[in-house]
Length: 151
Image (cartoon, rainbow, N blue to C red; front, side, top):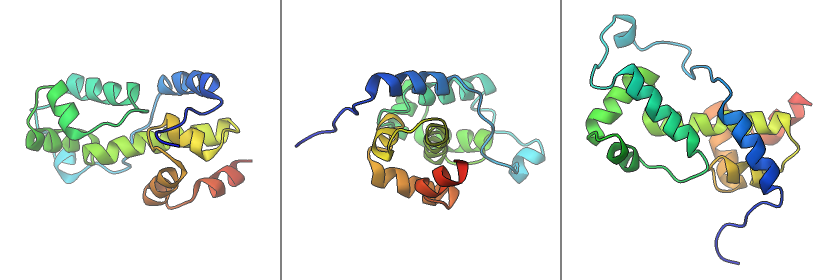
């Protein structure tokens, strides 16, 4: 069978995704970079523009997103975008996007009984393998272990 199948709980997942997309997030970085701590911000990306980019990423979390797409949408060069975004977020833009996806997946794992393929689908991680890889890389734990510990 070709293409990605729509999960059988698509309507319920979309409802959960909508609710989670509006939940406040904490900053994924516990530590500020030394540049931020010294007050040396890259002003090529205002706080308002940074928030608009993050909101745009979150609103399309289930879609493939590339740096080129973000740069085109916000009229920025790739090098300037990477540096300015990292100055605000403390990490590279695509790492931040992965963090957003994993954060939403954690919430779905804990708050629902959806299977890993369904969660991967609505968070843009494509399939269970992608979800597991993102979890291990980002959190150092597999999704099943996290779900079991939250039960």
